[in-house]
Image (cartoon, rainbow, N blue to C red; front, side, top):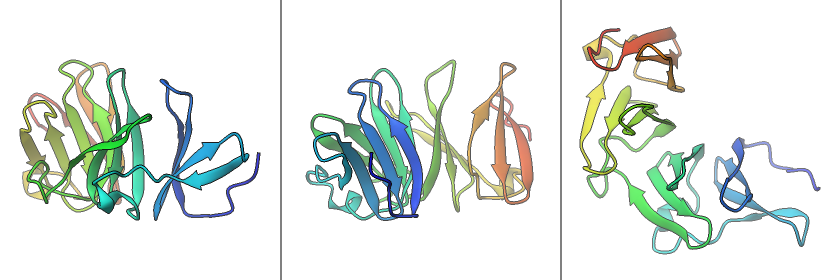
Amino acid sequence: LNQITRNDYNFISRDQSTNQLWVGTTSGLLKYDSLSDDFLNFEQSNIFSDFDSTNMMHFFENDEFILIATTQGIFQLDPQKGIVQHFSTKNNTLPNDHIIFIHQDKKDKTFWLGTRFNGLIHWNKKTGETEVFTKEDGLIDNLIYAVYEDEEGYLWLPSNFGLMQFHKKTHDI
């Protein structure tokens, strides 16, 4: 296996459906090619040209789909077909484009998104509804690096100014 010579990668993930190895970089997505034993630029962005050179932040996968958080919103990836959907401010499907982290709620299967400038976003992918929580709502920072859920209904949100505990139902911090 050749080393990844670039030092600008944000994640390395293997998808469950195809066992494909993916590397998200600050300037696009790479996929491992076993024939050449190398990482190649992903070239199936289809009509979503914004994807080709965007900063890849996080790789999320469940039994239904793969989502990639980027500085241009969220892209849905089908390992066979390529990029099949884009959620962003450009098409009014998200209130912010700089998404750092994607977490799926354990109970209702909606999503909690950590962002660079817009705090925490609660997003229902099926209905398109969003709710935004920022410093104005009590967060200590609008930069949320990740979202972790515990068994008691709290989300844990790391930021530049510390770790926040956020209750999903009451929105208490």
